Amino acid sequence: MAIDTVPPLIVAQLNYLLSHSPFPIKVEQMWSGCKNPSLLDRFTLVIPFCLDYIKWDVIYNAVYPLAAPDIIFGPEDETFRPYNGYNEAGDSKSSKNSLADWNSKDPSRLLRLIIELRDAYTTYQKKRVGEVDDDRLKFELSTMLSREGIEMCTSSGIDKPEEVRFAVPLLEMDINKLVAGSTWKRLQKIYLQVIFPVGKKSPSAPRLKLVSPAELKALFSIDDFKLPSWLEGMCMAEYLPTLEEMLQAQIIDAVSSIEVRRKFIMVLVPLLGRPVEADPVFCRKATFLACSGVFTFLVHISIPLQFPKQKPALILQSSQHFISHGVPVKSSVLTDYPWSPRWEISEMAGRIFDFLVEECLNFKKYCNESMVLLR
Image (cartoon, rainbow, N blue to C red; front, side, top):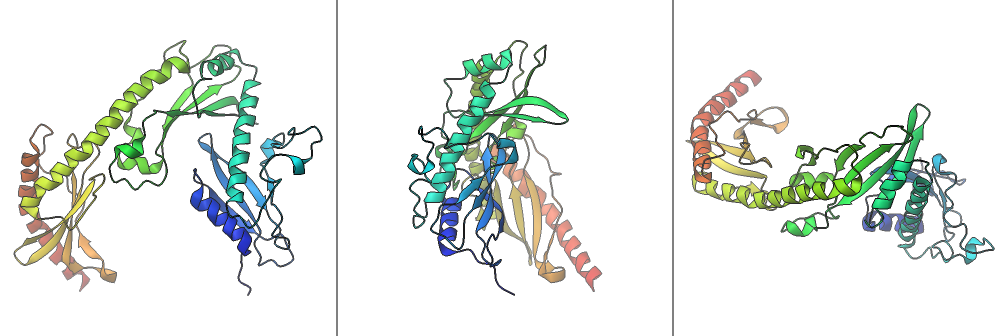
């Protein structure tokens, strides 16, 4: 059976795109379009847009790998023709675009093309939204012309009324720079998704939702953020400043909480010893090696974002007892110990230590019983 391969010039372009794109692009599928089915020269790109995704097929020709690829857009975008109108003759070869001077030996060319097309698609969708016959929508657009980075699109279906979606980037602060030592590869940005129904006689409040990269949850959970109310007659230009002020204050608090969690871990050191493993950036986790007589075990401590309002969760793991396939015996999540957010951090650490002194005996008994059941 032949092994599927991607021609070197094509794979260089694709690898560069995936590793250097400013937004996360995924390859959904790859297939062959030539007589040799093992040569994969076509693939579907899943590209983020307006807090959703668009799918474009990239069609190379393995027989002529020096030729520029064709791009096939989605069926809902039949009127999207990005390179029309660049010149009166309509000759794409003389147009100033990435396809006109294609160089297959330059691995950055595909990425440059996709960014160029995505920018054109953003303009295309903005034009479509501007053509929607809705007075309220036209007013909303007029109030947001000065904000940069907004993406928008229209959406409709057979059983779905027409609506317009906005992706509004929030906050000018650079969250990446606020967290010392963060390993985030991409800019951490929070967006407000705003969905307006179209054509309703009595305008209702839009549907609102905060969206952020999954990595941001290590610092701040948007699920815990309560959006301010949208008052009757309000527009986005009035709503956004209040939202951003509240969001900025909570982000700053979240950054400050890192040091609070760091101090808590440090206060545990005199009681449990230096951690064998710890989260040095967000200080959300720490693992300590403890012992009771000859019984040694690990203490895994997970510190919530809402610390000290919420208590840490503890899991004990034996260093001496193993079940099938060498898996160590662990306790359930332990949170049933005294706690008050008003205590000093040293008091919190002391209460956890006192709890562990007693709980480790119960855990040792549980480990021994587990071994008896396996015999």
